[in-house]
Length: 449
Image (spheres, rainbow, N blue to C red):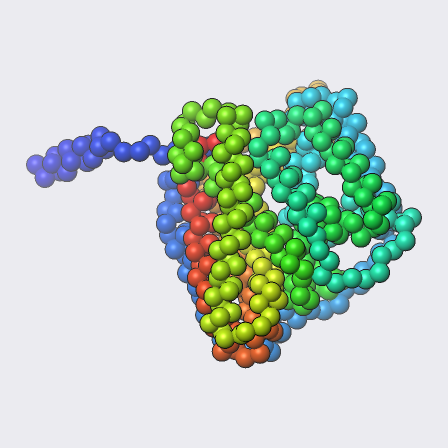
């Protein structure tokens, strides 16, 4: 009788009306995972890293980011700079005259899969590969080298970065080959003209991809011709320009909003049924407004945390230096978000890119000319989905831990004493713990598009 009663109550609870939750692709299985335990573990790891950082004196931080010199050569830079130009010309021609399906044309695969998805991760792992593949770099070989400058303002690059991100998110067909050829061609011509007018330093001040990739490369263990803990190049960084600090915040805000705008929560805010998405053209204005709001909200909230920390530490001067260095410490979080958010897209689109490259070199088909095979089976198996989710969560948590260590290092440098450094970090610690929770919540949150 007791078992019958329990079964009846269970059936009634199952029929109780509630809001439906769903996920695209592998997310349906993510909702079945104990994501609450992942979130609790991730936040706990970040809290533990805060406690460890608080105990580290300046000498301990220096030992943590110690490096060894590597033997590197710049002899390949000249030929690689030409290679980057010819690759760009090749993909432009493919976009104009090749198959116009976005997943079969090399132009959108190069821009959105290689440069947008894969290159940031490569920069973080191996250093500034973009330095050789930059399609504008070849012309700088023939121009007068700029005198060394520190803290260069990069406001034009920030504008370019935001414009590229908005185009990718809002445009109704950002991966249409011929449309992308026109946009990319005009973008290339504009910056080539600015290089010829302003000199080679324009790339480091005005071109969005170059500045973004240069920042990410500073997280690499191989950055600056030295090997050490990821982020060692940032640990030794000079005070950056205000524009570079805001560029870093913009990277994090853009990546965060790119995840938020797919959630049921956000779609409900703009009045869209997540299970019957009306199409990109119907949500252009809400997407733009949301993007701008995300940028402003993160900038103001982070600036407020920095100001409060600086006031708590009773430091009357030097707030801009504190703010810019703390913003630079957000870079590992931005990189972690990028890897986590785009991992699933890479697993699928990366296959299309590989097939396109194989076809160029005639490696694609076997003797009976079988059609290339694209698999998404790893999104349908609980074990593989759990692995994907674990990698995504780990990228976010590791990014936050590294950011905490860097921010503590910067605070020690500017504050003078460990007590002052810890006081200045209090609001930022709360900010980073909350942001860890946000990132892990986004991974497990129902998504509609």
